[in-house]
Amino acid sequence: MFLNQFLFLAAILFCIGVYGVLTRKNGVLVLMSIELILNAVNINLVAFGSFNQDIAGQVFALFIIAVAAAEVGVGLAIVLLIYRNRRSIDVSEADLLQG
Amino acid sequence: MTSLGILAAEMTNTEVWVTNSFFLAIAAVSILAALKMVTTDNVVHAALYLLIVLAAVAAVYVILGAEFAAATQILVYIGAIMVLLLFGVMLTRAQIGSETDLDHDQKWIGALISVVLAAVMGYSLWEAFSDAKLPDNRVPQGTEAVADSIFGIYIVPFEAISVLLLAALIGAVVVARRD
Image (cartoon, rainbow over all chains, first blue to last red):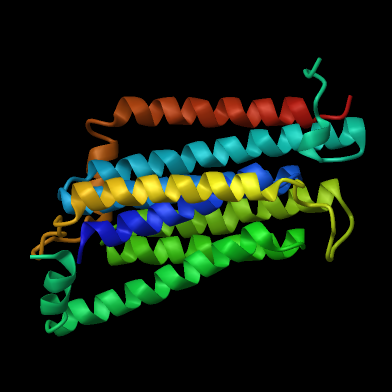
């Protein structure tokens, strides 16, 4: 088993997630793509933990899972608030800060 | 000796061959599901494709011997976060079915950026780790070791995560509350 096969899988999933974040307009779909990116990073952490025979990789992956849960909770609350105020969750329409 | 040559030599070992076949199948499924997730025009289908990717990542954890991370992945991601995302779909838009206006017009810029990113990361990974192999005598990192570690040297980050989750919970309730 090569380390690289896991790292390449993680890199490909990461790039697909970046594509999703950049192209999607629906706020919920952007959040889903962010979950994809976080999962790709977790694969890296667990793979290096197995490579070095160190438990720290898995522990950090667990921390990232907990942070992702917090992130998606707050993110969805924000998306709901945008929907309630503007009747749309199109993130490209949320441009009040643009002059 | 090139990596592919080592890989061919390794393929004679039955156990490694079986593990690698499983890995290739899981990787293909997860990449296809991820691609469908970012291109489909149905929000609920996108959530279900994300479910496939999350399950495949849990399977990758099992291959790597990280059993507790795999169990947590299934409990937290597939059990909780997926339901939360589907709630988000339900609360923001009643329409279940195909929609036309989910993507930006300049999709090719995003595609260009991610392809360039993939090329850069792939090249640097190939340069840095092309000969790195997982140790043959590696032992699965079981739940007991994870517990010893979390409640040992990582106790302070663990408590910080607990406070962060509480803060995020209260914050989400406050932000989404109807006044």
